[in-house]
Every structure is written in C-alpha cells, then in structure tokens.
Amino acid sequence: MTTTDAITNEVTTAAATADLSRTTYAPDFRSIQMHLMNEALARAHCTEQLEQAMREQRVRRIMAVRRMDRRAARAAQRARRLASAAVVLRTRAY
Image (cartoon, rainbow, N blue to C red):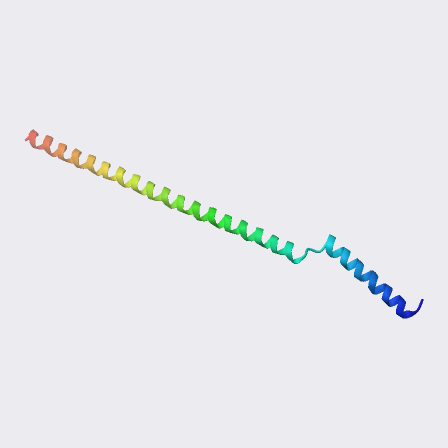
C-alpha cells in the first residue's frame, strides 16, 4: 500500500465516520431550527401566562380597593349618624 492509498483510505474512513456521527450525534440545521422554534413558542407561552397573571392581579387589587372604599364610606356614614344622634340626645338633655 502506498502512502497515497493510505491517505485516501484514511480520508474515506474519516468522511464515513463524520457522516455517521452527523446522522447519529450532531444535530443538523433543521433540528436546531425546530428546537429554537419550540423554545420561542414556550417563551411566548410563558410571557402570555405572565401577562395574564399580572392582569388578573391588577383586577384583584382594583376590586380590593373598591371594597375598602365602600367599607370606609359605610364607616363614615355610621360615624355621622352616631354624631348626629349624640347631638340630638345632648340637646334633649338641656
């Protein structure tokens, strides 16, 4: 076997090994693209869920503020009624 034959045989073996490793181990461009598309889809889904959770949280806060406002208004009304009742009782005592 000559040196040229040995080199040719080595190159052919290396090419076959590279071809084999490419099909079994190394992902090709298409599978990388599919992986990246799946990651982008998952990222978009997570972003959408986060935005929805933030909207729901904002709604819950607004509803809580409105509840507290109504409660404060009722307490103020109750205080006014008690104050007027106290004034009426005080004037009757004289």
